[in-house]
Length: 57
Image 1 (spheres, helix red, strand yellow):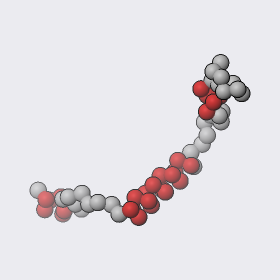
Image 2: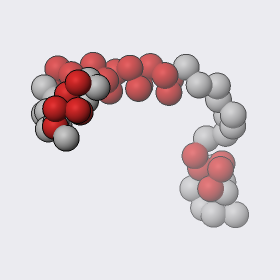
Image 3: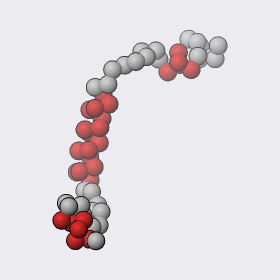
């Protein structure tokens, strides 16, 4: 079975990613998320329902 997996380009055992690979992948994810549109431009306090004195309304 391992030979079939390797022939298909699938490693038989998952390999550990290097810190550099993890950092690169996280940067790619962060860039994709940063490019998403803002759907709600309210502050977190406004979304939760706090007023300017940080008191729930």
